[in-house]
Image: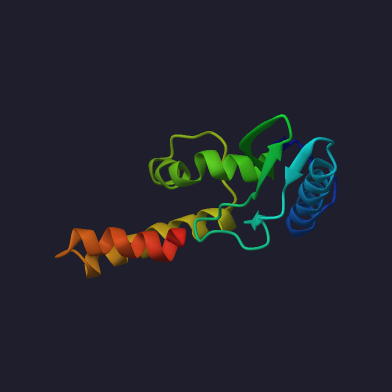
Length: 143
């Protein structure tokens, strides 16, 4: 679920992000009230606790009474969705200057710093590629 929320005139980026998070949580509350659906307790809140690469979203799984197949719902704003879909590519776009829309400097620096941290890990663990992959899975993806 991608919520299309416009930034209000005069609204700071932080206030806009906060308002977007509130809308996402409200959408989650509405989804939890849908009839014939259960679950929704095992929330992964990547909005309150973003991933190191800037990824933000709410993940929750529901099950319909008539079809006991799990359905994962991801709830985020359009801005969060763009980071999720194009966030990693933004570094390469930033470096090559191929995109017409400039990214916000704060987001760019966070993404670049995250990629640089991966490069540092690669350099430190260059002799053991398997150790590099395991460290990235553990540190960056929580596995």
